Length: 172
DNA sequence: TAAGTGCGTCGTT
DNA sequence: AACGACGCACTTA
Image (cartoon, rainbow, N blue to C red; front, top):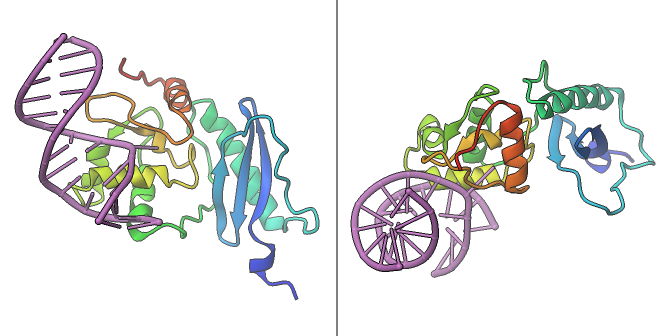
């Protein structure tokens, strides 16, 4: 018997000029995105179970959105994002991140205020580090209060590059 | 100015 | 109970 939980998540490659990202799909939508991993063997999608039509549609949206985001342009349309695996606090942070327009930045403090926990700025950093869909959920648009980069799970080079492509300059 | 230290704060493990 | 993708005050060089 095949239940959804046995088949999902589907993992599909996303070829981009920056390398091959990996997109993961739950029954609800895109639930994970991974930066290109260096030399190793690619984690392939389950060959035994071809993705349903719906997932392929989502994946097309993901591919277009990601390529556009990597070029420093706002995606025209996003696949449904499944952020349900996060805590309430994390989901609140992630949703708020999605409201920061391309080409703009906020501070960790500002985001903490925006989710109604003005003193939880450090926890906001933690939530960013747990962001399952980087780039499309733009955690790279959060900078430290003094304008410096702050941190980035995938490496500060990525954060710098993403911001630069959006026309943002990181403070030396 | 730049770099390092200490501490408050709070969600997560 | 310990640990951060923070921020601020303060000390040193």
